[in-house]
Length: 329
Image 1 (cartoon, rainbow, N blue to C red):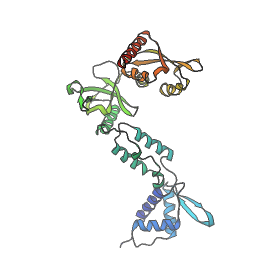
Image 2: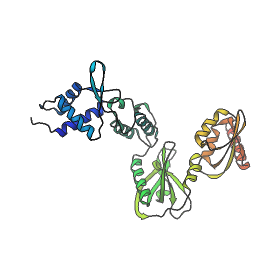
Image 3: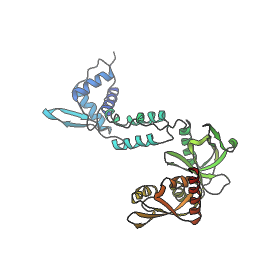
Image 4: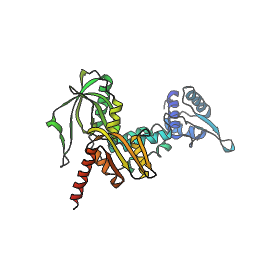
């Protein structure tokens, strides 16, 4: 059997150190020799001098290999410098698993790729897709392709076309507007509540709007370019994604439980207009987008929250409560 080139041996040694060593797992010279000999499956013998030369070459190339002394004079070697810290990989893995637009199969593939950025020992500690049951089988399989296309269109300021729809009561997906195409100028993508949303402007329309990417179909990037208008996207995001779709207006809500301050701060931020009334009560003032989503969110607080203004919204909420009361009468 012909000798294996030195470059092949060096790369094989690099792979061994990358996959099998980290801060807690190190290999002795004997370990390195045995593993490299097994990896190259050649009759060419490997000795300590060769390993040391290979280690020197890898260090010079920027692949740092640490040499440490242990008990009884034993020398061990490891590669500990990674592109991502372990906690960063865990955060990325958690983000993938919590993303509603990512299917279970896609999550497994992405986490498998992330696992290759660390040692096999640390990879085993990353969260497993098996522990998550998102029940998101309805997520369209081309969503990941559409995300790439929209990013391209945003970068190149190109007009896109797409169709949009939703699930009906029979759990079948049906297109809006009888399948008519939307012509759109995409300005950005935002990830909110586990879903991707495209933000931009409909052609020949004034103002911004947004669409959930997993509900889009037949997304195409056209050859036509658009000129961005000077919209305040930050304000749009604050209003639409801190609250809900509908007509924007100032709202005051009284919360009668001091423990609710944390979820309110989580949603609106530390800069939210919050006024303390007493040790158990506070009032939130915010420019909310009032619509069905708002009502659903507000009702979730039950008797712990009360709308103070505007009067029209107070009346609407009273009417809604009366309807609920009648439903259970």
